[in-house]
Image (cartoon, rainbow, N blue to C red):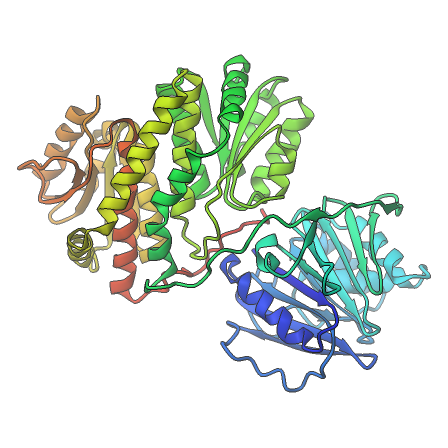
Length: 591
């Protein structure tokens, strides 16, 4: 959530460069934006609520070579031009933007108001600006005032400011911050993620919590707590931004669904020894947990299912924000397996930080190299899914659950069999996606759902958490009520909602749960519900039938494809913004 992008170099279109950087951070979600350029000993600022237009008028900006930019996702203060970042200091000598939430901002603001400070916005960010101004009264240098103020902020926060004299200062404690260096062109970038400048730099520094960077003629790093200069060695940039155009597809979501088979095939090419070592560690662990948030939380639950059903490990899945009751139960030599697209999910990081202090071993499967979760991990696995622009996760979710399956097969001593099954799955998914008749049938089904208020999903065993992901996609894409339920719980409560023409999407695979699912289908049909079945075989009990391939142990992953496509086509018929659904962001870096 929120995005920071900054530039210092020898090009004289810094403001346009940072705007393009913001566009590459677009997937993070935002409701307002702002740009500040330093030139001729002055700051030139433009900020506005709403989206960055394809061609933004920066004609009022001089041709400077240093600028910062920000996209805001409102947390304190409503969405308007005034609350957009960056915020000026009182004398306009510097401007500051922030990612995060200052949890004690009301107390600090009260103290500053008592000292006569004036506020023009409703944001916690402006409180940071005024606090720095207050610190400047006793500090000789701006960097010391920034450091002193930053230490008083509670919560996970990252800030960046630019001075009228052409200096940038940034500090991290929570929300991600990376520095990109192009040694060939003598340019420096600062951003919220590496992907945004991947093809523009030769080297990168991923900042740790409680680090500060000062950028002017030199690039200097400092420890915020002690103020001591840090010796930081940049790493070679190994990530490439990949193709971030839609190509022949109408939406990024469609393009990324079609890339699912490729990302699963990539898993089969990863280093076998890493899986073997990890599998042995899991078998030795005292307790095994999986954790994630949002869609990654659903994926973590499916990973735990595979560990239980295939690896015969007593794995427990946790949701990041709701794992507080487990923290005191974590023990030395437990393993927490962390699933995250960004590797910077705030509520998950908070759990991991506390667990690590208790001696817990961290493992992770992440799509963003150099992320905080990856750096905390003893066992590090990368998704290698490439950029995913659509806010709704598809191909990265495919990779997450397929990776969990391969890990479970490794624990069971069946790594080679797992690789073989994933290759078969990849081929089947690609075949399914290549057939236009499948898309035509799914579009027809999606059209029948346009006027439905609620959509239910029915599943059990390997398909239950996959039905939960289908629910997430339907909610994200259509803004309709979706409800995934385990078939065994049907009679306990949800059956009261079954009535004439209520749509129920049932996932039916050839596994131990098939007869139970068929019984549940009977029960909802008796109440008038219309069953849309995703299954390798037809049945007279299905009102509508979506044929998929039977891929054995990986059938649940195969079933993801029609669920993802139904959600996409439903959103299309409804006229919703498919790649950027309302009110949600891909990377949630604040609690």
